[in-house]
Image (cartoon, rainbow, N blue to C red; front, side):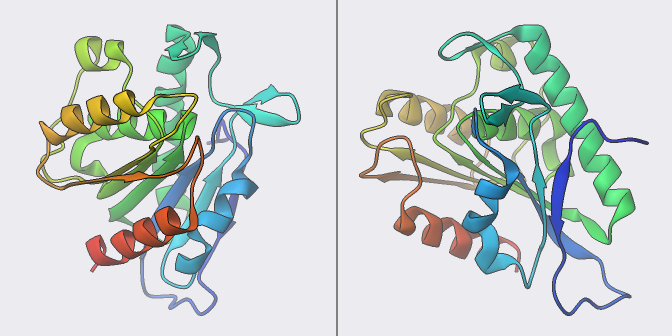
Length: 213
């Protein structure tokens, strides 16, 4: 299989050839790229295989996974295709590399967070956990997708208190929705705009270490 997405992969420096490793798949925000995401998870690079997935659509000097009709309003068929292609990519990478299929995590920012939550809702416990930074769940995902149980999926959601792209109200609504579906939810608010603070990063790095124990 030729994957839909270009990607960067970082393998632990001292790998045991007989071991399968937990993996973090990163999904970047609109107009960004996979390399910008690696710094967020670099502290975990000795313990996890890290796969940075680049959006397959160009946007300025960066990339995206789907286009928008308007802010917060994805073009439906492009979004559906991204979810389908990302699921296929996860299976591809799991077969190609020594990834433990029972310990796969997604970490996404903004557009990547939106997709991470949609993938969790459609893949269920095929994922061990997700980190969703400053995102939301599109209404059509909640009402029209075939959803699987995420009761056993660990979820870390964070949102900027002063987010000027997705107001904090959206963060609360998203956490309320996800919290109704799993008891394994951590929801944190940080005094930031649409970004990731050092404290936010430290918290989700520690969270990932804990849920992977």
